[in-house]
Image 1 (cartoon, one colour):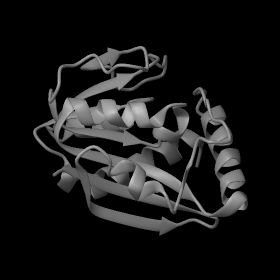
Image 2: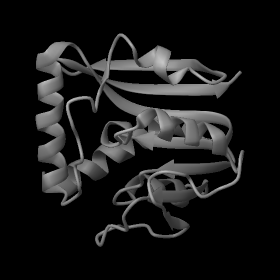
Image 3: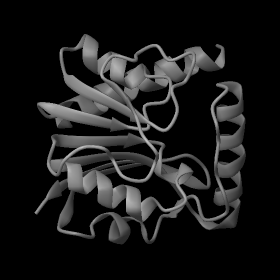
Image 4: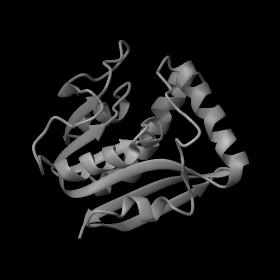
Length: 185
């Protein structure tokens, strides 16, 4: 299977897992090639896609908004939910992006991230990230502090009046792939 086929299969699996948590209005932060947004659109779920670049091979640019990567260009509580899948580790100031997602979301944040265990897990994640993004011809702006460690993730994401209501970890050898659902307290 080629990388694009792998990505589509991966996004289909995540869509089935995340679908029960989606709300009436959703913002996908870091939509990339648009596979997840396309799945939501096809299911009749309202989504706005947001990214810092318009990828030339994106399959969904419907309701797409380009932004500067700093301030999400929507008013407070514009969406019921915001989704970020494998995005936070690409952002130098992930706490600011999380704060922005919380600002524009009235009820829920949905995160898919990878949490490392020890330096081996971090190195494995970095290598994997660079390789996957290279194969998909996407920018991979990562650095040593890119990833959450498994011990501090929950504390970091729950700040600002939000509570984890669902956390699902899938071990991947040196790191966990995590689905985290946060609701406003």
